[in-house]
Every structure is written in C-alpha cells, then in structure tokens.
Amino acid sequence: MKKIFILFLMSLLMLTSVTLQAQCRYCNTYEDFVAGRWQPLDTVCFDQQSKTHQVWWGGSDFILKTGDKTIDKMLKKEIFAVMQADTIYVNCRNLRYEKARFGNGYSRAIRMGQNDLLFVNRKIGRKESMNAGAIAGVFGVLGGAIGGGIAGGMIASDMLKDMVCYVVSSGTDKKGHIILQLMDDEEMHEIVKDREDLQQLYWNEKDESKRKAASHVLPILEKAGLIKLPKE
Image (cartoon, rainbow, N blue to C red):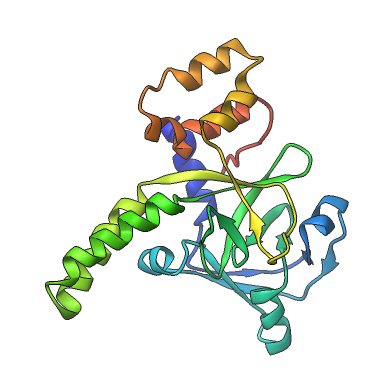
C-alpha cells in the first residue's frame, strides 16, 4: 500500500515548474464538470508551492497562471477546475471541511465514480485548527522569529505526514463554498459494506488515524473500482 501511495504522490508533485502545453480546458462550476461543459484555455503555467507555504496558506499544490491578468484573476477566484489532457486540477479557494479552508491554489485530483473528484491533502477541520493554534501559542512565548520558526517547523512536519482523502461531490452553497466529504470510517463503511474482502482490509487497521490515512484508503478505493490510481 505504501508503494502505491508514494507513486500516487510522486505523480501529483512531478515538477516545481511546469507548462501545460496543449488541450487545456476549464469549467466554471462543479455542475459544469458533471455535465462535461469544458471551455478552451490558452497555455497555462503553474508553480508548485513550497512545503511551508503549503501548510500555512492552505496545502494546495499548484498556482496556475497564463500571464493575462484577467484570466489569472479568473483562475484564482472563479474557475472550479482546469484539465490538461486527462489531468484535473481543482481550485481549493472555496473548498471547505468543517468550515476550515485550504487557501488559494490548485490540487491535482482524480475522478471517483461518475461525478466526484478525489484529492489528497493534509487534515483540516476544527480539531486540527485548535491543535495548530495551541502549538503556535505555546512557542510564541519564546518570542519573534525563534518561537514562530520552531512552531511552524513542528506544524509543517506533523501536517505533511497527516494526509487524507477528500471528495468533491456537490456545487457551492449559499455562501459560495463547496463542502467536502472526508473519506473517514462512515464514508468507507458505505463503500465496503457489500465487499467482505474490502471490509476486512479496511477495518484490520485498528488505529483510527492510520485507518483514515490516504495511504490506507486509496488502494481500497481502487480495489472497489471507484478510482484509477496513476501508474507513473
């Protein structure tokens, strides 16, 4: 399972600076994505954010730009997803889980089933926000760059090891947010309930945190026929 997860992450984080040469398309909304309403987009360049930036500004992997200010503003604030060939990048700006956000930037995603998008990212939510705030507060008393640097390093180290699977399966709510599903015990129960082999595979991991980890969940979703993991 670990090898599969490593290959999956490597495929997501290929290069620090990449140009998408051809067949670039975008859709404005989740509903457009479901309906297959993609619009052409000129060549897009994107930069992978640093690990520290990922943690402090939302954990999204890629910043997409065209060099055209109007289009770049759309990419940042309005566009739901961009596709190059068969690779999909979902805009994290309006994604929410337990009212927490990833921040600006795009994450590489894969289709799950017919209408859903799955991506791997750090844990966010009420519990994670409280823990991060508590750690930063404790080390903040050391003062200035020293306290902040130590706290930031510890949080970055923890969060980057704490990767889980999120699913986009609906459009925006009244506030313009897209509410995510976390692939947790409840969601996985529904997926494996009719497959005894997958039930055993999932529930054999007794530690809840490890059970929800992307490295544990992804191979099971693939065995269930819901996703196809990149092989490169």
